[in-house]
Image (cartoon, rainbow, N blue to C red):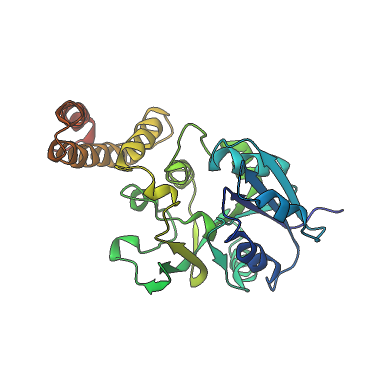
Length: 283
């Protein structure tokens, strides 16, 4: 079979009840030159039997022991054969024109290699409005990505060669792996934003990774320190990054203190103190 223009990467773990809707949202795309790579990350709920029953030559299925979403995505990235990569979480869905609208926008901006879109948020079955801090942007957005993860994996379309050259998802991050990747990419490349809600992003369920661990800023700080020490940031980007490390460390210090975990609180207070000098201004 000849390569498709878009490879869609769909990792899943114990979401047999949600997976068919995600897959169908890919099948229903108005743009049809795609392949779908579904990676079963060690599910125990019958997901594999469901996948084996799919009858579509454009869908390729893989199975691995439970090693997490980053390894599952990276497996699919290695096996993909297309110019463009799209990602879809198994609890999200695409609108029918998602790929078409992004490819049209990228055709108008051939100099750009990363594109994301707006999204509709559904929480416990009810549509909710994102807060102002979740507003999406295009262009050079590294500084906007520092406080939290502004780019949803399910909204992204990017060139495959970009990840092959710059590295894909860091498998050492059990959560915030997308935050870490977007920091690396947006520090070096501008992004295209399509201001249309082309993704239904579902949340509020108990098995969400973002709900599985308290204090996600612990992992975001690790990502910030990693990129700061990686030597790829400009002077201004380095200052912004250090300032965000200080801010997040102080928030965690207060949070641990309220929980009576004084040693952890002291650790983050000292971390904030150590990074103040690199922040370039009193904080």
